[in-house]
Image (cartoon, rainbow, N blue to C red; front, side, top):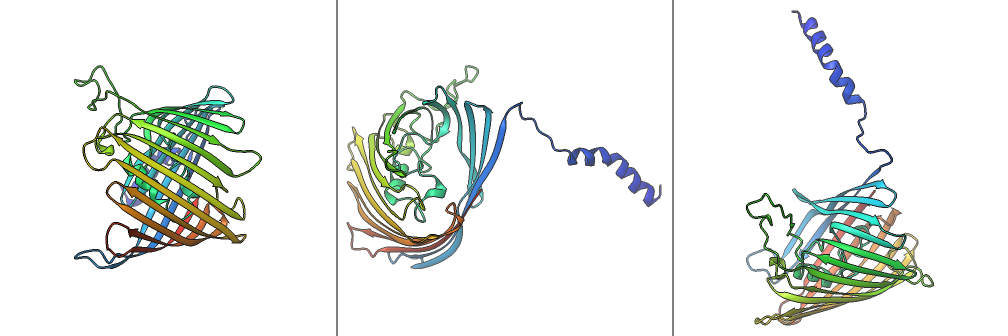
Length: 351
């Protein structure tokens, strides 16, 4: 067989594969709508920490803060499915896996792993709506101290909206790492975790139609599960917020106040409570540029910190696609250590 004959035979055998690869394949059920979206945050950061021992005081580098791919499916007019994958560096994980069902026009049922009733300043503020480089430090501390740094959990939630008032009731595992999948065929039917209790959270929000882009509310939660993320301690947690201008670009001047607290129960160690306060002020100096400043205080039984953030955000073609430059400082009020400073420039793209 000559070279030309060999090539012709390969093309003949491969033609069905080539043809099939060029034909789009869809397995969607009739009437199902499918959408895809994503976000990418990249940044250049400069860190100054005089308190480090054996390490450079000044450090600089480039990194990816968040990279996410989102998949939306609407198999029925009253049913929605949502999957979200997040990556930073070389690792990826599913952050959200939820199903939503509109029981009535005013009431929705949600199940899976998702953001339930919690402080408004944490993950209920979507990543592309974060005011500065990062969410308030007191919010990230709350998440790490409760059921996980990504502030999601496995659970079921009922959301009811009546007029300007939204109510949420969230029954969840209490630890975002515990996926409870009981199976009678398993040697250990629980699949590993030993669960004897569930965490509960509730939230109320006022979204006044007479004051657009404003948001006032509070949440409270109780977690008796004593999971590792909560340092094996039972606790109560709560928050309150008042936002005048909840998202960047919605009005010329914005003010946002957050308060969050944790109270550990039935503990013998010294760490018993946490209280955090945050106030943000922002102003549009041009239609495409917002200046912002945020001051925070975090008090625990063991530590007291003050945080200061200031910077500017520049809109690209919309406010979900932007450049943000910010300076942040953390001061330990309980020690004689020097403040820690971070300068960062972050790009954000969202589709």
